[in-house]
Length: 363
Image 1 (cartoon, helix red, strand yellow):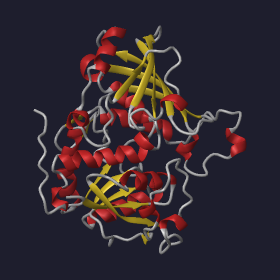
Image 2 (tube, rainbow, N blue to C red):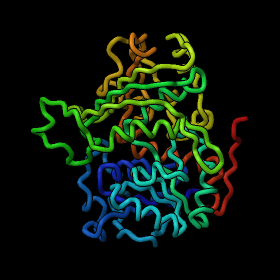
Image 3 (cartoon, rainbow, N blue to C red):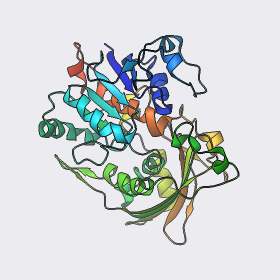
């Protein structure tokens, strides 16, 4: 049985991606698109300046945009709200009994909120029972996905941390223009240029978020991984796809061959469950000297895979490599949809349906 869902902030760039991914989903029925007062009451196609390369589905275009309220005709909401308004609205929706899947940074580092990459830390969903008890939410909850630049780096590090232990990471991002939203960076700033600054908080997110995601869930809190991370973020004149160069120091010796084997043999839970949005494989290893590249590799796994290349020894750390992910699909809406798919298959959303989900989980 499909669960009725809504998109908050549905007319913006990430909101459009949410709507496109949910318009014909096997688990979820897109019942509501909600946005600001100036868009409410209009047909979605009239309220939206559609910027995706994929055409807007006809039935989506005919939907009437709803005003933001905690009385929407759906059970789950996917939040593409800006951070300033997300903290208040997302808590209000959860308190009103909605399941909230958020792309915003407002709640990511809250102690009782899962910061989730399903391949990396599915067990962090165990925090939700504590979250609901602590906040007095009967069935509502908030689950977040990480910053779009944290994702490719963390996906690459996740198979390595349990085997070799990670002591330190130095990372430099080259972030696409679409990460700034629409219309984004002014053309005269972007053309023929690299901007060595993204936002005051961007490097803080890259330093902190992987430590939470790679940490251990200890009942009511996450014990951070304790990795020393130094990140520098840059905006580059590329439309989509965030590229990160990564140098790593391990606690235990690991050869280039050991690392390749760890990546290639990684089969995390979403891939075992064959979730609709889970890329097969989750990591695409490129052996060419000049890959991955945003234009050639950002759509790997329908935009959900992380492409990794240029693995080699590092004279300062132990190894270095390049990782790439599509920032508006895997790094935003697609990552949040995958979070919801995992909870659906694990029966964690059964409270929102009349029919129990029966899926055989891997041993």
